[in-house]
Image 1 (spheres, rainbow, N blue to C red):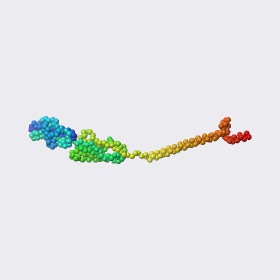
Image 2 (image 1 turned 180 degrees about the vertical axis):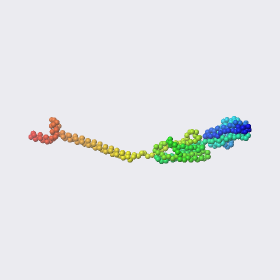
Image 3 (image 1 turned 120 degrees about the vertical axis):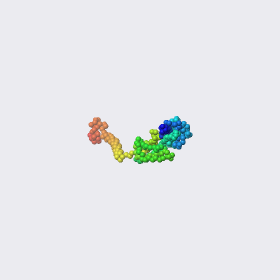
Length: 289
């Protein structure tokens, strides 16, 4: 019976994980308190609450529930320094304790992208680095170019000066094309403290590329077309000039041939006069003599 009583007097609790800035609840229960009070103490072994009595002046720590069988407290605005083992004790003979490990997650900062020289020449290799500090444990970084995932070329993890959080850096290299001008490069952070919300940074690529140059064949055909156009223009101009000349020459010739036939009594006489010309006039003149 004594062993059973001791077993039932053993307090129980559980480990907790909390995001920095959040609130953690520490619950301790015991089946047989044996007329003793439960107590919570911090990793530095400072008493926080003994039963329903506050022992440490820290307004972040509040009493949630105090009964003979339970002592539950909460710590709000948790900081990284709050991490560690918290102890629930019941002062029976002997003293019984239970440990609760509180893990505080460091929230990674918004990532930054470095090394993007703008604009990048077409067919050159872009070398980019993404960096995020303050994560605990170390965060994971992902790259995306448009809708395409990019594989990193290496990851570096460095402990921050506070000795608790980490700075993570990731590098990528890829050859750019003119089609990627204006495309978005995104670096995202994956971390349990973000609770399924995305934290990322996006940069737009500016790709410098030369304008298209006409091919030799196109240039040759363009030159031939130009020459043909000039020739056609010259021929049309020549025809116009020649036509004007012929019209003027033909008018003069007809007027000369018809000379002397205006006063002919009929068409036959007009033709004879036009064909005979001066010879007919001479014959007529000889006849009257």
